[in-house]
Length: 403
Image (cartoon, rainbow, N blue to C red; front, side):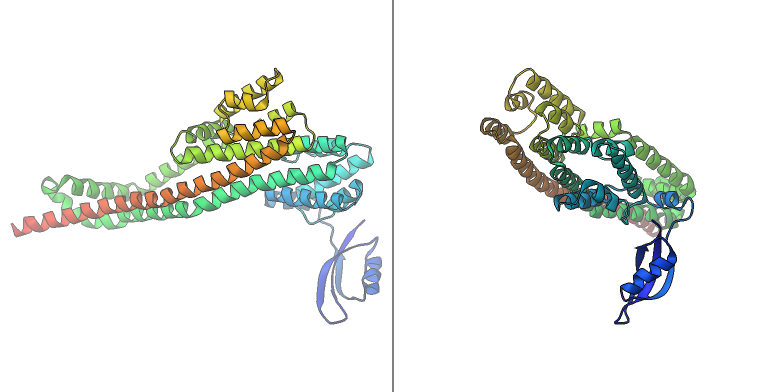
């Protein structure tokens, strides 16, 4: 049914704006009149041909868009709204154009007799693997609303962790960028002012000679240097765009002091929470182990978890398999063992996830507490060396004049 965008005045004279569905503009005006609104303007809200695709290209689909859309869907289902009606409602919402198109396609699939999981898989949204498994398990168990809510909660946690890391690294990144800018400015504009002192290069201290020559080189080849830096940045960005490169770096980070334990705690928290959510939604243990492994980024840790899955498949208890591969901490093995014996493995895994999450936050704070002063010392040291070089050049020139 067509939509019409309106601007109207209510009985108190306040201006209201919105959209209304009607078969014609005249019917839309009558509907607004029955609501006691005085129409100021009324027009077709349908997008022009290709406008939907254009709007979709203006902004990429973010993880937060997916979280909001599926959170709304889960809330409607938990409130007793029928699946077909809830999906149809989402297809008319003000979400990202790609999500609107996806929900429209899912709604069409449901009317044709498709299951929700098949229709969702067909639209190709960038959802985590565990989310699709939760949806299928929820459908089979008649717990689709709860499965969606659990999947959204896990996606929110993943996004929260990424957001915390980005926010925590913002200040050090700004600090390093400002320091590098200051160094470039000094080499490009300050140091060359003392270039005349190079005429007495034989009498200059080596540090003064290096600083002055470095400044002259930076001034003469600033364009080439900036181009080289840009090229290096592009190459690094392309390299890190490859999952294999990122995975190797995650593995290396686990060997570093301070950073390593933080990464290990973060990986353990993510794995535990995903596994707990899958098991709570009646996903078989072996399938849940394989899916939880996908949330781990370090290749070495993934290989260990593969061995854990093989051991469990051969009949070994999960706690023993994890301990044999040194995949968790001693506390983790105890919690998993208690969960297996008591039949409360999902609850114990959630507790393990919370413990690792809190420990990871502490590690992250420790890392940042060291990163900021280290960045200040490095940048300050570079600027200090430049200033010392300039001062040595000036004092050497004065000594020669006096002499």
